[in-house]
Image 1 (tube, rainbow, N blue to C red):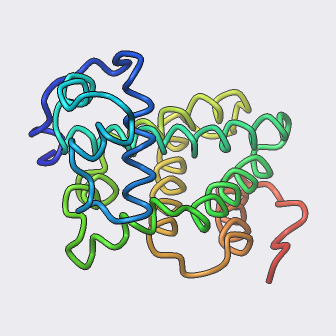
Image 2 (image 1 turned 45 degrees about the vertical axis):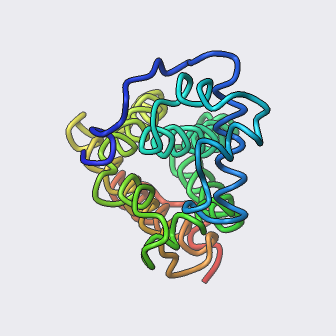
Length: 208
């Protein structure tokens, strides 16, 4: 992946200043755009030295990767909460997970800043969610696969993997370029999953 391959290797956990630096970068990107993010500015916002920023992050491409990973954790937490609410109904769990993710994305200032990369303002960020998104997709699918397996769906593992891949890619596409409301998109994807599983979504298509 071109963006990630340029990054200076840095331990994933980092030191005590890593998370405040990433949080400062997210806030600055959302407020002023990716082009405004510099190591000097981050050092000032986080109250540390520039050398500490480099030690904790490594480089600006590595910072982009860390920011996306940080926000992915937020999205995966709402997915986990949705599955926890529906321990006995896989279709409902997927419906609520999709809707929660899309509602979070709908009011997500960083994602709007990343989306502005299509106009050339954040070339290091957009590939992490589009052409260079394999690591993000792999992590999201792995988390979802563990949750789905607990429901013992009536499909072979390779078919379950296909369904998970479809849902994750569809959600990421709607995150970056919504074509309908979160509620109706969740309905549509839940309907698809229900048909594949051979069950009836209940209730079916809540928002038409």
